[in-house]
Image 1 (spheres, rainbow, N blue to C red):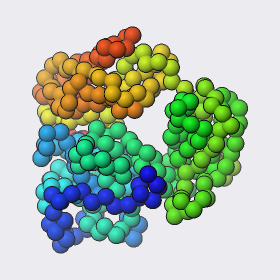
Image 2 (cartoon, rainbow, N blue to C red):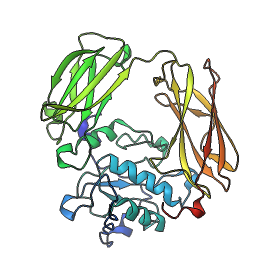
Image 3 (cartoon, rainbow, N blue to C red):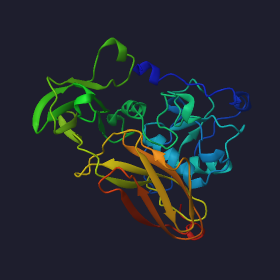
Image 4 (cartoon, rainbow, N blue to C red):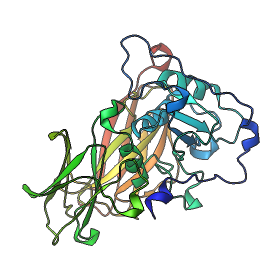
Length: 353
């Protein structure tokens, strides 16, 4: 798919009643409290960068908890957006979504012509949507990193970042694509400098504010690829990927976006990553992972879940108890099971979230 395709507006289907939103006014988020750090400052209407947001949750939950909306909005901010255009089934956003917008200092707008509009999630997993920043389980797609790279770090809107969109497997080919909001990127192969360059300039990406950085390897080099981002000739950020070995075990992750899991109906995504003996992600698909939960909580979504690019995911909805045990099992691995224990915050006593 072309980069231009990633930036096109994807209409969400016949059930979206856009007429419900035509007369709505732009609602600006409240200013952050003194001493509160935000990822994106609340903008004026001329500097909005908007994304069309479809709040997709399992089993058509119509009223997701406040914390679930906040986690989605934090992902949106980290992708470089400062406003959302609501595209839910209801004519107006849920009250908790409005509260989440205020807490996360984002703007609600109905003006589709303002900024770049993308979906954060697909409406249904089987729609074939490729322009979404994430899938239903909030697993980041390539368009997430493309979107994030469009906000330059010199604008003090986002911290410098760099992402290697390559797993360094022979099957991935010799072309290494790097997304970054830095001025230059240097590629380092197994500790040796391979090349340093500015963003691509060919015609397909000329319309982008910040095109990716494409490096062409002379041959496959198993080992480590490192990318360093430079601003004003100074290295400011780096990341690396390592050639994966055979899948050996699972690594469980709670996608809480920095917002602690709570009791009383919190909704989170649990990821089980296929890992080799060094802890590197093994991007295999169609591996079945069975999730189990102990304590007052339930799992939502297909279970066993099949991996996508090395990650199988499921939703977790909490109950009243603060202690939860999570177990994930992939029978084909040498170490098939991983268990983690969660201690949840008491939602009723947590007045700060």
